[in-house]
Image (cartoon, rainbow, N blue to C red; front, side):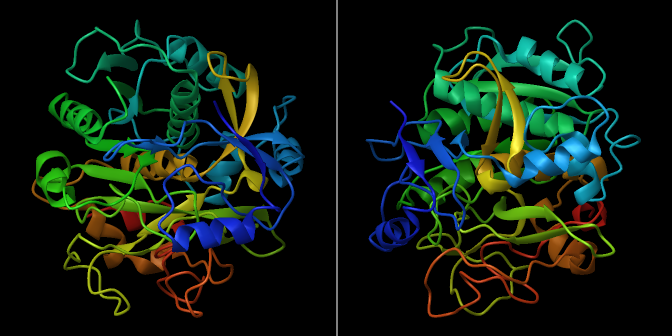
Length: 402
């Protein structure tokens, strides 16, 4: 059963819980007043994952007003494709053709294709269907023996499919459904996505770090030439796996609002975004910050604050139809789709390193905080690299090329 929580009421509690290594699924924090529900249940076993999707259940997100001003058709609340493409300067009309973005999630969403069709039709995007070869759904082994349905993970699936569509309408989409939310099954699904040819794989889930992570790294996430993105978490300051893997692009979260600047938009650190020092994973060679001896989370970021949330269409979940979502489950597929817009990575490359070579092609996020860490960059937005937003948010695709 999901829990509905007020983001305003739990900011202090969430920070304190994270300091005590609270499990995934605790309430996310925010400085605003919408109420949210975690789409997926809190894990009860070691090496189990939870999705990082937060559904807005009460209140009016700021994005509801901005989107209505930017789209001609009567649109649902929350940011849609026009806003997201404008905010991140994405060449969505011309880019991504021929690229496949894989979405890895647990359990089955029987309505995935029909819900995706409703989303794309609402915003005037071309159809993406099994019949046309644009959409494909497989089980974790690449077949059609789909796992049992799960309404919470179905919401996550809809969020992921819609965000890839929003950022890269010309991309093909491969949905790989793991048999359960265990790291072993989800990791098997990642390998299947790569084996089926996907060069971009989004993972919007996370769990506690463990001594097994090095094994998971080498078994599931070491795929040169493939851009693998992972949500950094929704519990504020603190690190999750597999975002901590040295082989992936860990995607943090921001609050995204319109602004009277040359860009027309501004990002600030979302208070729920995960960040910090990994306890187990080694630091990749391209990461040069000095505050963590091991891997630092995150690398880049995109919108994740439910108060500036995105529009999602889902009919199998615990809502019905149009909803607004936040969480780093939104930012991970957006970044995977941005990699796809930039083109296929070269063989043998590690795409997680690409943004570090192109920092000027990102929107630096310089304000906001996700918790308490003595004012350090690990939990506070600042000029240059910081934990919650990484190197920043997309400004076009240059930062995501080799």
